[in-house]
Image (cartoon, rainbow, N blue to C red):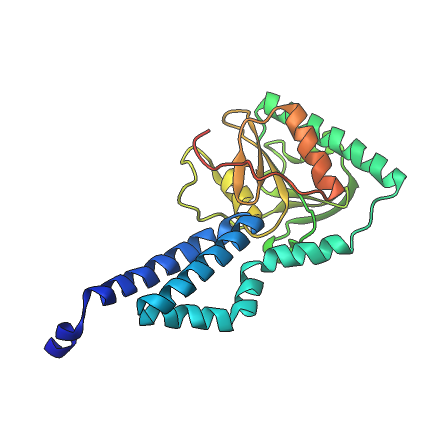
Length: 261
């Protein structure tokens, strides 16, 4: 051990610190936008690689050489969700005019339903499935195949309804399931004021590209949840806009931030 300590130099310490910092930031940037992630990956890699070649930092050089040799596999792992969405989007055709009309009607029914439930302080959890399937993430309560109407949604989430505590699933413009259990988020940054519905919405949105609507029975506020982030106290016009994008298969913005309402 004394021999090892005697041979341990200041550059060795910097070498170990660089590897630790690279590993830490490599894990942090996985949740960023795909373009930002790719830019950071390439920037950090090439700067670090050329720096290690001329600095004599053997550990850093070894790490980056191994990353380079496995770069295709690493990139596929980092962007697996984005790659999957891209392939699904490629196979998605523009809807027929009558389907677009049905989507517009569904958007209005959903907007009216959450506004009515918010006014009455009726808690609700509504999932709009987009490109990625969620069957493997959801515990199904009751199978339903019905047209989306504000009256039906209000009746499902009434406090004395046997399935009011679970989530409603809307897929292809149809109400397909009710009373579903969603995976709860383990994000430590979620505000403590958010209850089980918000945590369930976040938990699902962290693993799929679904848009989740939450009505709080405590505050009567409406939240939109997507990509592991919450937009709290949303106005009807914003709800309508986001629902249209969700049903059209368009990319949803990333402006939701978890935090205090």
